[in-house]
Image (cartoon, rainbow over all chains, first blue to last red; front, side, top):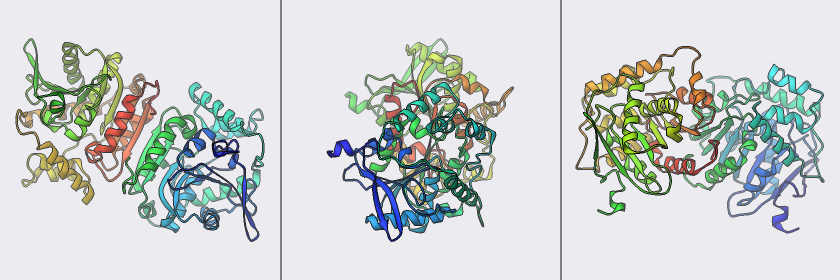
Amino acid sequence: MNQSQTASNVTAPTQFLQIGEQRYAYRRFGSGSAHPLLLLQHFTGTLDNWDPAVTDSLASSREVILFDNAGVGRSTGQVPVTIAGMANHAFAFLDHLGVTTGDVLGFSLGGMIAQQMAQDRPSIFRRMILVGTAPRGGEDIMHLEKPTLAGHLADPSLRGYAVLQKLFFAPSESSQAAGAAFVQRLSQRKEDRDPVSGPEVAAAQVAAFRDWERFGGERFAELRRIRQPTLVVNGIHDEMIPIPNSYRLSQHLPNAVLMTYPDSGHGSLFQFHESFVRQANAFLASDSAWAPY
Amino acid sequence: MNQSQTASNVTAPTQFLQIGEQRYAYRRFGSGSAHPLLLLQHFTGTLDNWDPAVTDSLASSREVILFDNAGVGRSTGQVPVTIAGMANHAFAFLDHLGVTTGDVLGFSLGGMIAQQMAQDRPSIFRRMILVGTAPRGGEDIMHLEKPTLAGHLADPSLRGYAVLQKLFFAPSESSQAAGAAFVQRLSQRKEDRDPVSGPEVAAAQVAAFRDWERFGGERFAELRRIRQPTLVVNGIHDEMIPIPNSYRLSQHLPNAVLMTYPDSGHGSLFQFHESFVRQANAFLASDSAWAPY
């Protein structure tokens, strides 16, 4: 296959990186002169939860690197029960891949890992995109027992990606239609797929969310140390990690632009994928010391 | 002068529109195939408070129309004490100018007038940009008696535009430097200038702000009737009309994108004028029924 055929999350082969006992599954595709873009995935998400409408457009001007953290998809090991533990796996992966600095798109859980990494090693990221996520000490992070979420999770008629359409999109007709299109795009990949995450992955990641809600000392103070230009994005009706968390990020990060989308929930980047990729590309193309682009 | 020389708020001649006893001062410049863009000005602001870095770049692909509402600058009449009264003057002005539909950039007080106009006559605007403003029923709107504002207003060393540098920009060194550049740009126009607004203009406009803070029935419900694609913009440290007002706008308008800027206050559009104009141009260039661009 030539580069244009493989520069898609529908067809890119899954690769494996072995470090001692630990194996990481990943996909790496796209090209361009810009820095590689690391994509850090949401709660229970695998390589197959990245919408090709987003990944493939981003890959048209840079390499994108999709990554299964430990214990997720075909990566071995235990799922860490803290964000810091997940950040350590991401560092090990990037170090052995030889990536010393890049950009990052962290979605949901992945956005928390990205923040942790930027604090632990500021040189790792040049620019950051944080979508549908929360700062440490954020509020109402992935409380799956809430009626607005629990109903969908318990609905036996919703299996596989169908539950994502309910959880990631707003109840409006227009948002649900976008959700159906999203599910269809995810279903395009037929071979070389990751196994679906089981309850033990979910349990460990929920433990990490609960830990992330705790804070000591001045709330949000650690965000001041993240100096990278950052683009914060969320859907205004996000029920999984509600919008006040994005407000707090953009208020306490010293160098962040916030963009919110109407009529959308947690998966706003998939609902408005054309706009999101246009904005992300413009943001990443900037070399300014300031986030506005 | 040719078009390129006059397509600037530094040099565009002030024009006058007479309707019976009422005379309106305005400037109209720029060209392009897009809809004209009406600019509605902030508290006590005149035609000479529009930053040429913003107006001239916007005018490169459309006509922009700057307008002194009644009693402001060289427009005759009494300054209305309600936003609805100001909206009526803007309608009269546009009607006699023959503009039946256009886009609007409403800044601060001007953003309230734009919302009122969109509710009174939905066909008047195609797309709306609301910067540093608040919905009816908003909170902490232009309370000049607050210590953060009153100190600058009472400082005898701050005259003319110098007080704007303090009020419109954040206290950081970078924001104040942007404020100084803004003041310098406003000072480029040497002739055909508006008189500075006096205390009677301020008093009437403050009365309009106090009225705008009041609401009856369900708070923010009337925003649901504004269906235009809308771009809401604000500086994260705005002390004059604080950021929660922009959050409320983007949460209750059914079709709005919110963009917030770091390190900036009420005048974020002037501080990050290159980014603002780029975003505004992209937003206005879209023909989508949805705001995301």
